[in-house]
Image (cartoon, rainbow, N blue to C red; front, side, top):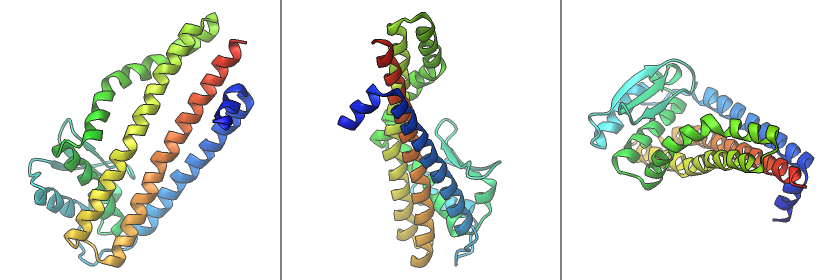
Length: 234
């Protein structure tokens, strides 16, 4: 708490803290790319492409209605609950590598979460509508409040930004649980052998670290905004 109070009372220290978290986030992003690149060169013994394994995992979970598509980019994989679709990136879709299979299984984990009504997913989904509004207006409120020296508007902007931090916080258990489900499925159905599972797990762990790093950056930014607001009250 003393450290937090120090940051809130010292704009320069809060700025340095933010810069440190940005560097950490950059390292985490680089690490996931390097880890995925490493294990996306290690072919699985079964030799099945990720999209085929994705279909097997979904069907084994009773999710026959979930579609699988290929999307452009690298590590752009995601599950879209609006269209009930698992989207696999170009580097994953046809790959037989252990890294790609780990990523594909992770996205299946998200589809399973929605089908099982996993509570953190429901909370996260409920936050999306107000988050979309907050994302559009928080900066303008903060900026106008600074320009007009209107403390109420400054704090209104900060509160809306804090909602974005809460959203990222709720995202953590969703992502970790999806990875947990992925590894359970990979192990349970013997999709990868024990040695290959290490590569899949390391890929998913590296990806999880990017979410933690992103949360740290947003939290540091929130602290910096509060330090600015507190400084203007003096």
